[in-house]
Image 1 (cartoon, rainbow, N blue to C red):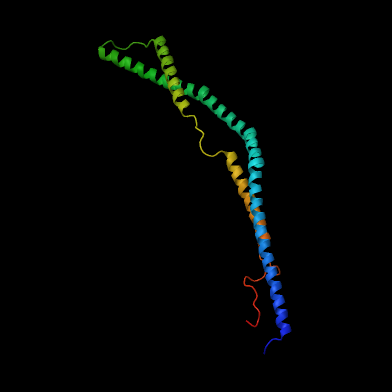
Image 2: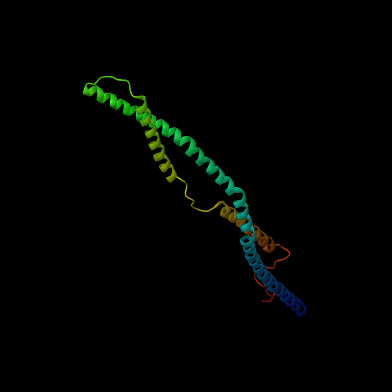
Length: 194
């Protein structure tokens, strides 16, 4: 059964309309992609110009002082409490060791036991404790932490950038997703007599 001329003409008009809609949709998709690219670029600019400086300023105003204060307090406790105490203990131990060596030498030389001289014992203890304190202070000064790697502000800026990019991609996906009523098939319509 063949189609009448009228039906063929109507089908060609329908095919032409469908092709025009298809071309219009392709232009629309191209423009939407361009808008998504521009939005992504603008979001990157906004992140660089507005968000990153705000995050950096907040980091420098709130986090850095707390970290510096805690490091200063820790260093102060270490230098003024721990090192002198350890230095005193080490100095006392060295002076006891020195007194034991003196006693051993006296016994070996046949001079016998005698009471240790408290003044010389105290002077030696002070000298050893000062020496040990200085040595430990020098070693601990070398152990101060070196800054390296990425800062907290940079990590926060990166996370915010990733979230913003995800939002742009989601908006683009919502714009370009397939709706059955809006999209036409990929192949252009053919007339039935071909």
